[in-house]
Image (cartoon, rainbow, N blue to C red; front, side):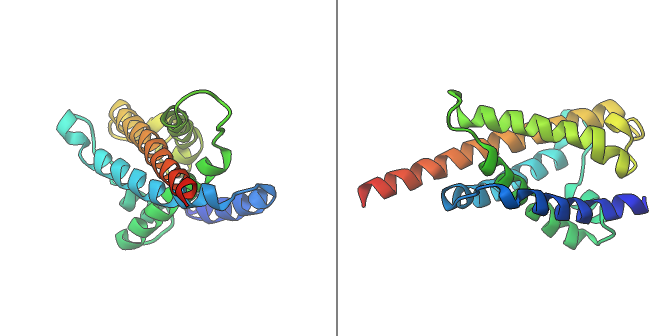
Length: 173
């Protein structure tokens, strides 16, 4: 578990170093930050409300805080910072050349994040591969998948709305 608590800070440093060659412009950053905040809030609420659908709840702020050895309040802040960082990553890699709606890009991004969680992060935090070491593996997988689908869709939808609004304002000036 100690390794899991040092994994996230090391991952952040590596991602920062690798992203130095990436071109992230203001037109990508401005919509990504609020989209990341809204998408993280939506995902967190969906995962906490999962028991209404008969699935186990996942308290993301608690999981994120625990994984870095921090209290719930710090986990809440880190949860939203992680959501914004992932939204910035989405903005950097989002391709406007592919002729599908941006929310489709978001859903694909959400599924990719879910796979990374299940294959890399889950085993590091003690959940096992595909949540195999949780009390309800299938339920945990479904809650997590639903949360990541909501995150991706919301991220893509809000990102596109803000980007289009920015374009329309720049055209009217």
